[in-house]
Image 1 (cartoon, rainbow, N blue to C red):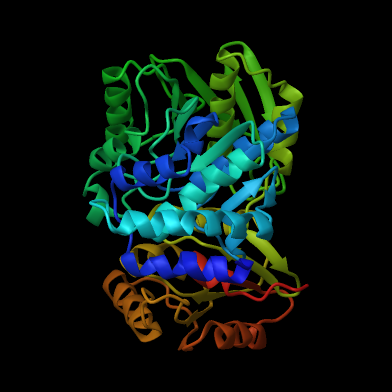
Image 2 (image 1 turned 90 degrees about the vertical axis):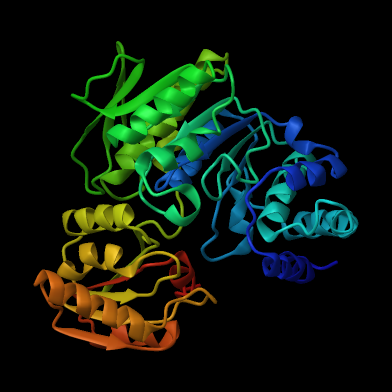
Length: 441
């Protein structure tokens, strides 16, 4: 089996959708030799920031000297971004070998009471198998959706991390912050330490409740000045060009960290990652402060305020819900100097466009709506109408120009035509749209 054939087979499983639940996943892993039981894991969930936190923890562990696996959802430019080993995408040969090994097991499983394996289950199982084959010493796994019924939730982790809780995927996870916090906090395992970065009062209370019920030693991550009666890692902003440097404090321990990741919201993610590191230290892992600082400094992740061009500046960000858009809108004018912002926007169902546009439209002089490359993409005309409706209802600032372009490539081309060297082109609304942007080289 070639790499291309392996990827095609995995993507063919997309026909079977995304099913929440663990029984079939556990059955598949058993047939693969239970690789997930042989690898210590840090398990990370959250509405926003879980990918960045996964990258940060993995980088810290790598700079400590461990052989590290990292699992991300979704990928942006290259399918192999999902499964990384020591910071590098899984080798094509190893991926093809894993799929060839798993395919007959999956086909046999289809004829049992468990039914057809889904694309996400296959990717997750492949990650566990690849880490075992590659001699990974510790893995950092990002949840796909929610937590309680996610395919990654088949492990007993060293540490569980809840980065944030926002109102996203409410159709599957529930309508309130408390509902969503419950679903995500169910990656906590009895007696195993956890980290909670939940800031909304209802979400924070629910994370505490789940932790207490399961005897989980909980470390909270909070901005300096917030009160807590639990062990707490506090963080304070430090001035920096990227608007992401942060001072961390736990009891008498202090550390300054300077990530290359951009944006004020990354301070919270860094704190959650360092919180996981402190919980690992409590379990005997030797992780020096210098490794924390180096790991934070060198962690990177595509599609998160990623700069891919100058004159005009081009920034890619996969913000696709209200909280992510709010963070992006807050950071853009603080980090970048520009004359006008030209926004290229595409989005997928079931996310609500107006919840994202209300944060970003006030910054844009020109908005170009396009169709993200996915069957779930909103038609660009619908996005335009959402923008017009929201602006009319709120009397919001109207961009000088709003256009519709059917394909991303034409939208990117149009943005470049309209931009001057002092402008900023923002591509946002979906990781699928971000991933369609042509990178040089």
